[in-house]
Image 1: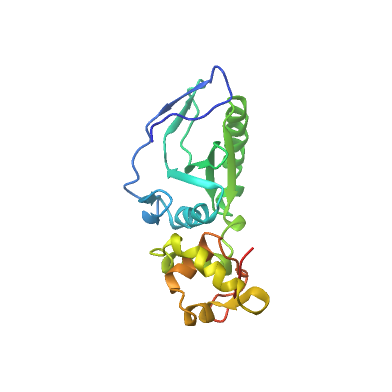
Image 2 (image 1 turned 30 degrees about the horizontal axis):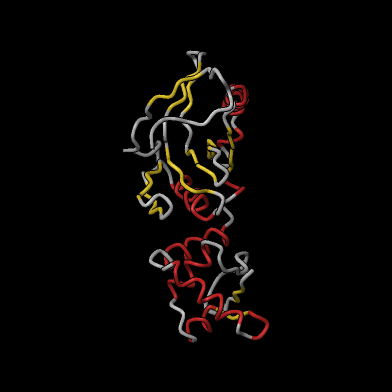
Amino acid sequence: MGLSLNTRSPQPGYVLGPAKPVVSGRHGKLVTFFASQKNDAPIGCESLLEADYCLYLEYLPSVISYRAQPFTVYFRDPALRYTPDFVATLDDGREVLYEIKSNSSGRAPRWQQRRARLEELLGINGLSFEYVEEHQFRHPILLNNLRTLHHFGFNGNPCNTPSIIRLLLQQPDQHATIGQLIQLGARQEDVTFALFHQFLRCNLQHPLDLRSRVWAD
């Protein structure tokens, strides 16, 4: 994927340049590589916080693909340039720039001033921008469940999802536990794959185990 970015502005007041490759983490942090199925490649992140957001982008069905540190936006104002943490392509064709901050750094006055200016310039140029703070996606139980489903479902086969749904619909109340589905012949990796990609449903606000109940929409 090149540097091109969708824009609604006929004469954009910016140019795109290549961002520096992620080879070292931010101060006091380590580079983390996230194994992405959507991108069929590992995604290099400057921090564990960004790697956790990769997991969230992987989980959202509206996100088709995404890149980390994709490019640098150079505005006409030479004093301001911006490298987004991620750019995602959505299922409606839009591209969205994401900035991810910890709860503390997101409240720093310097960032608040920079954010206001960025939102102004990006908006003028028709670029979609979303600012995300840690508390918006780093819910401990949900995040741990997504990590578990992503790990155990990484080698799941999407072709087996329809048969698991048929199996569920044959059960009383059209519900079953994860353990029951496995006992009935479904492979664990296929069940967890279908749960992570939201072909099947379960309550992710409670810790998952083999007794967790599963259903299909």
